[in-house]
Structure formats: structure tokens, C-alpha cells
Length: 381
Image 1 (spheres, rainbow, N blue to C red):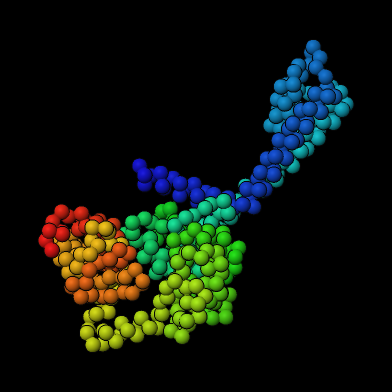
Image 2 (image 1 turned 120 degrees about the vertical axis):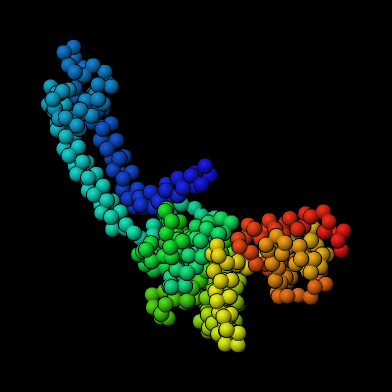
């Protein structure tokens, strides 16, 4: 039932995305104009065509109903007898013809737009608000891989993804990885510069779980430089995590000073993997499986050390977690220091996070929590 309700809400969001803000405003103005013509015509008829014993007009409701008859069937009924009344009726018929023509043109325009956008990711409507989502600035092949990982279904929650880039609304759903093409697609587009305040505000960047800044496909092109995007995203919120894809390691210092939370250098990571694979054949496959969200592999996750594991040696956590299909591989201290394969006697502390390998994040969290709650944990020390 919860999944059905979530699907209904998502479908409603897609309908709202199709009816963009400009169309909604035009439609509302058109309906208000029709309501004004209807009310004004009825009041004028009531003023110039007073009720008579043999007339179709006997009360105020008849005048309003008479105007509706004019709109749909002409002057077959409720025919006015006075000259001013005939003028009002004629003006009402002309207004009705104009209204039908304009309304038809709006509907045809909407159908044409929906047909044109078939197969493209939807635009994020101005009135839709997201929280705890992922914002991707700039679009490239890396963005496709990230969306595929985030929409793999192995996460605790399938967070919406908002792509902010020039021409983002022209991204084809077919170009996304298969895992991201589930219906309805919860990937949204915001056309505009990711280094601008307007586009990031529309993407609700300040409420995001993370902002990912990708290296533009071509430097100096229409996409913003990563440094500009980081500055703009940090201006939206001082707390939102910002990750940056780097091409060169020399870019690290200015990006960190601009407010980047974590950085990944494709040049550096690729070189390290190739060096390890050259000495140990097959390790590249190991790294690929670790970094891929798949039911056939395990991924690394950070799990906050629960209260029950405080002051417990790492070796104890390791031995008891393995029995629950989770493998601790390291510890991230509260100050951010990461220690892989730490000394067995190193005790856990408050604020630490265990780096573990598990098939899903939910399994990782539940396994560590069950270790913490086991009654014989402290007694076995």
C-alpha cells in the first residue's frame, strides 16, 4: 500500500510537471475570464430584460442558466425581447466563440508539448518541493552512472534526483541506465546554469541530501566550471554536503576552500586502480564490484557506532559482524580520520563510524545494531 501511494504521488507530480507554470497561469486566466463573462452577461440581462409573465426569465437563476444555454446551443431558448438584451446576448455569443477558440489552442499546444517531451525526463515544477534528494550539477556520462547507482533499488530509500544543467530537460530517459528507467522515472530536470542562484533554488539545493558537481564534458562550454558550482551551492546552504568530480588533483585545494565536502579525482583513482591491477591481476574487477550497487556484490557503507559498541575492540566487532553477513573493514574517527584494517585492540568511541561491506545499507545497519544489542557481547570480553 505504501508503494502504491508513493507511485500515485509520483504520477501526480509528473502531471504537474507536464502542466508547467506558464500553462497553468494561462489556463487560470482563461477560466477567470469565462467566469467574468458569464456573470456579467447574466447581470446585464437581468438589468435590461426584466422578468415578464410569458418570458423565460423569471428569476436571477434563469438569467445565469440562459447564458449557459447561449454558450452551448445558441438562441434556441431564453430569447431576449428588448434591444439592450439582444445586444448582451449577441456579445455573449461572440465571447463564447472567442473563448472556445483560445481554449482549444491552449489544449492543442499542451498536447503538442507532451508529445514532444515523450521519452524525456520531466521538468521539475516550480510548486514541487523536494527534501533529502540528490542534486547533480552539469551532465555527462558520469551523471548517467551516478543516476543508475542511486536508482538501483538497493538503497534504503530511492531518493529523487534533480539534474541542473543547460539543456537538462532534453535528457532522454532511454539514455539513463536500465535501473533508472523504472516507471514513473523519479529523475527531474532543471534547465539553467548550475552556477546560478535561480536554478539551484528551483532544485531545492538547500534541502538536498547531497549536491554532486560533475566535471563538464568540455571546459569553456555552456556548462559551469566546478568551482563556480561549488560556490553557488555553498551560498544556498552552509550545511549541505557537496561532492565534486575532479579531473586534475591540482584542483583539490581551491575546491576545498570554496566549500566542497568530498572530492573524487578520476585521474588519481584510475591511476591507483591500474597500479594495483598491474601488480595483482584481477583486482580491477574487485574494485568494480565493490563500487557497483548490485544484488550480486557487496558495497561499502558507513554505519554510526551504536552506544552498545562504545569501548568495544574492533576485533570483537569484526568477529560478530561476519556472522551476520557484514564485514567491517575500517573505522572513521569522529575527527574524520579513516583507518582501514585498524589494530584489533583499538576500541570504538562515540561518534565513530564503522566502514563495512554489505549487500545493502539496511542489512549493514541492522547487523551492526544487532551486534550492539547482543547480550553476551560485553561478557565475552
